Image 1 (tube, rainbow, N blue to C red):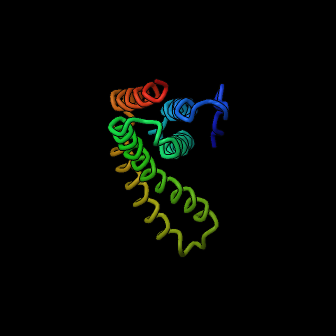
Image 2 (tube, rainbow, N blue to C red):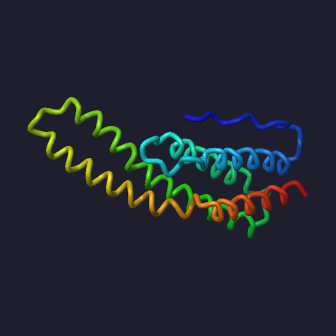
Length: 158
């Protein structure tokens, strides 16, 4: 799992809004850093890292909520929540598949057929969840999120 980055220049003596701008800017950057390879169902770590980063970003937005203009805040938070939900839907399938795959190797022969059928269903659900996720991680949609967050950060700096 990707570790959170330090927030450069963070100073407990500076204005709360400037601290909020710094933290949200770094946490937003982490989300975008993990966007590559997120749709790959063979390597599930990029998706996990992006999901964790989106949760950190959401928490930062909520902590620093008073720093941001209401309209810009609601717009950005809505987009972050939608992305996190789509990532979570896919992640749930990834975790179940990984668990059952490991379990399948040790399962009695009599249970393997049922487990393989369950795995097939989960892989199908994973594929559908990935299809629903794809628009959220498309360049244009990520660009809109990046812009919304940049506006929010800039407003807090003013």
